[in-house]
Image (cartoon, rainbow, N blue to C red; front, side, top):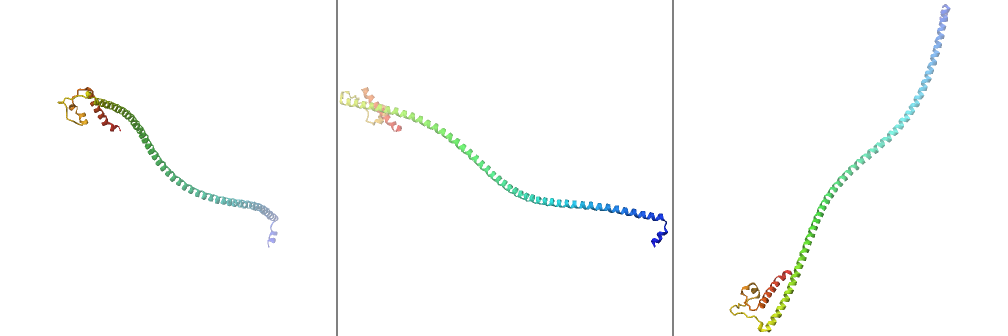
Length: 228
């Protein structure tokens, strides 16, 4: 039916239709070629994308591994940090204790210095006292020697007086005469030494000197125990 109808058409219409069909075929072929080129380009891009995806996955796995390593390191650093914090707290407590000990030691040192200064002052005063006592001892020793020398001199004088008395006793003419009216009652030598008013009136001055020497001897015997 169509062919028969086409035969009825004029020839230019048939040629036009043929040309249109040819052009459509050419357009379809060029479009197919372009589509094939696009498909091949897209497949190439897909391959590249797949490669990039693979590399990205590998990189992501590497990064994940690195992240896990970093997480482990961070955990270790946190542990070390907590340990260091504990160590710092321990060191702070030890430092406080050491400061307390240092302050206590400073107080002890100050006390020791004060005691040392007191001992030095005591030593100085002790040295001064010892020097004073030594000087007093030397003075007393000198005085004692002088008094001993005086006592020895007095003893020599007594011996001389005894010899003189013995000599005068053997020579009755040399005995001093005492007036009967002035003769006092007999008294002890100590009382007679302290009461010179009751002494007898002696005619001989030598006998009077002998009595005075005897009184001086009694006085020497009185202070002798103090020197000893």
